[in-house]
View (spheres, rainbow, N blue to C red):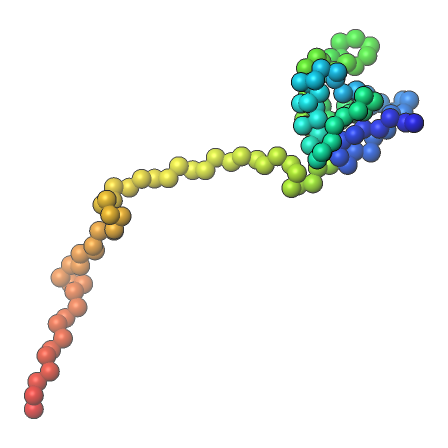
Length: 129
């Protein structure tokens, strides 16, 4: 059976000369749990033969000093471009701070005082005829 990447929506398969590297889930329970959470598949746990392809790791997760590309110890997958939008981590945006104005304690706005020019003329009282 051909090994394939277990990430959601990833169709990469392990083929000779494909240029991709595939990485088995770690045996360390804590690191394995981090990988499983990163994959974000509901009610799913990795089996011993499950793999992730190199597409799901940031470039700094790899050691390319020798002839072979190796995953650095402790690396956790973080790149999942095929996730549906509702499964992607929300981007946290900072809200602008509210400006606190000096207002009376009862939160009423101060009465607007009209100048004499703005005042309405008095209404004449009705006269009897």
